Image 1 (tube, rainbow, N blue to C red):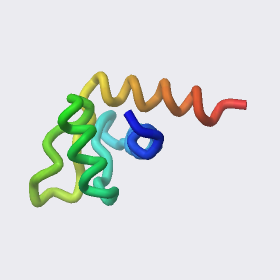
Image 2: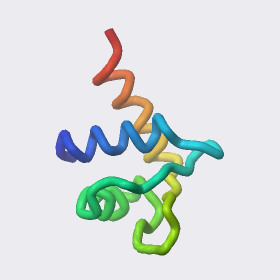
Image 3: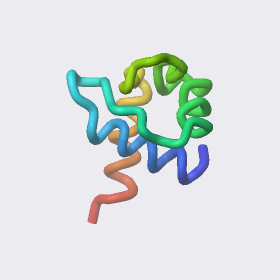
Length: 70
């Protein structure tokens, strides 16, 4: 994964509501790449939000701790 994909996944996981849903206002190519890796539900829909998979949520939280912990 690229650093940009890592950062977007962290933001999606951090701002998730209803346990795994987040707003999808990020670069479409990045969202598509995360979907292809099995970390998100399909972002190609009319919804303004996207669901993270269990793995996407876990990895997003793990990366947040790694990247932003003191």
